[in-house]
Image 1 (tube, rainbow, N blue to C red):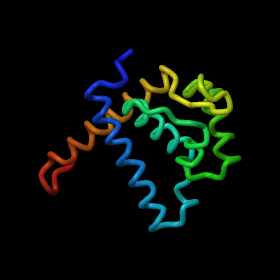
Image 2: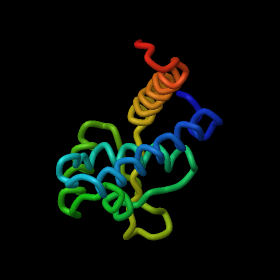
Image 3: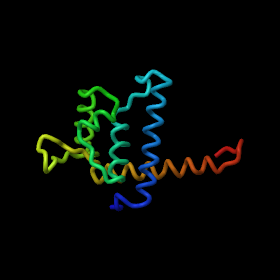
Amino acid sequence: MTKRNDKEAASLARFARMLISDRRKREELFPPLLFSDPAWDMLLDLFAAEAEGKKISITSLSIASAAPQSTAQRWIDTLVEKKLIRREPDPVDKRRIYVRLSNSGYQNMRDYLGELTQQWHGYAAQSPGQNS
């Protein structure tokens, strides 16, 4: 397992935050339901938060998904069932539950975002009119 708060993870976290920002901008320009993907928004947010050393509560994750609370909760349940995320009780406030990526969820996101950034760098390095 790769260390979660290393330099590469920090760079990938910035990339994940850029993807989240891009998704919100797209919702300003197009009808939001065209691109609704709460599970993906959650995975991006959880990856960035973990790489930044932040904890995310279920409430915060629901807000980050840009979906209604009930829809967000169903997606959280599905992601837990698929073993991509896990719930962790707050040791101080028993009413609060934190959510984080599972080890495999984190590694899958890291691999995907790493591959995606390499592809983007490759496209950016091509001269205009050059095909891949």
